[in-house]
Length: 584
Figure 1: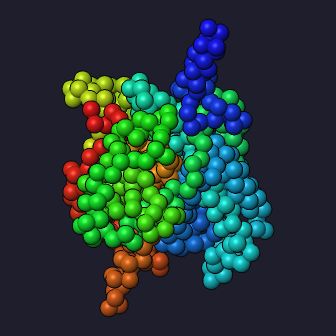
Figure 2: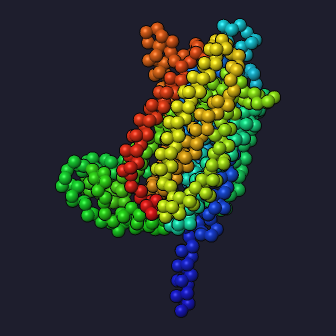
Figure 3: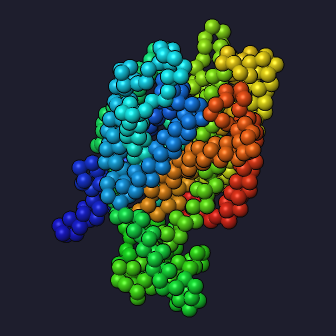
């Protein structure tokens, strides 16, 4: 009798543990003590501070590079795009390490300290004039040259150390917060959806402080204060994150997801994906006993119906016979289906790159447009880099409205757990980006017409037109960002295999990176194509912004966005959800 009671106690103890998770001391995570909304709340607070540190400089970096480092506008825009693109692309590295070798907890702490080091270097350079190029007004115009040599090395070392840290944070923090919820329970899945909405809300809170208070400090007090606030902010984020250590449940890394993907692809190729007999021979292949799943992985195995291979991407099915080629190529049915799910998400990922190319305008050309306009509201002069305050405020209002009003209403109407699917949300963002580029082109036409009528095409004097006109394109692009980013983060997290979630979620940031790189490439290509035959390039370095053909550039982005949306519809209409809740 006593032995039976002991067994019951042991079973209850096992049921109270989060399988596949550990606490910060590497002990088994316990239900009721670890995870849940309280643990996720620390992540949300950290996101406010982390994004403040990031956007405080990124939103105004074009101004810093042109006015203090003496880069041309085109080069400054390209450098900012390269910096932000690199930061977001490195999120893949952070996600990979989170899945393969370390937990998201460890990756965040390491990355935050790296970003802290980069910001310290930038603060020191901005504080000491001897580490910067001499001001243009203290020497002849011909001697006003861009930063170079050791000073440039210090600048880029600081920037790209910060970028490395930002990438690690972006690749670990969202998935760390999302992992705190119980996806086997509908209530847990709804809380996770709320978390992603409020993750974007907190991101916007940090952005609001960054593009108002910190940008004002940079423009009116000094850049050493701007970099200093960012340094303090990221340091505080580390303290807040560590203070929640006792509440987190951290997923135990399960090896490199890239190894699994590569193994399945190589095995399928070697066995012969074009052989009909090979495909048929594995059609009813059952999982081997070695593929027993536990905890949340049981849910994942069930939701993928992993007892048999699916008919989608059938050329990968022969991979289960990889052991016939070499024992190292032995693949389970679950592994093959996991790789299929990742491949199916890639077209959706590709279709969001164009949208993020449009978003890149918010921190490049749009800033310089606003700088050329009348930025007074009463007696207050608004810094050009503070323009993102418009979409940020709108996102702060829309995020809770979306979560507490729109989603519950949609759930009642559709009688589904999600209400509005991830892909529908992303689609709305793509449409808004098309409208944003059309509005941007029309506003630029109006701005240039005012410049022409006032005879200020070649002048640096502020144009007699309010900068609030530029706020229209910021509003549309900010709305597009809200719909797309939250939708992408949740889509990649929920649809990816549990062993690849951090890496998959990082695709949301990688899409941003590709968008910034595409923007840089388009500037170069457009200039190369338009200056042929001795003509003036649309976005040339030696002409002022009033001579730019930004209107045509924006129309080009608008047309490409329309084509991209049609491409997105092709894939979205054919996609079948595999996550629990999404299929209801």
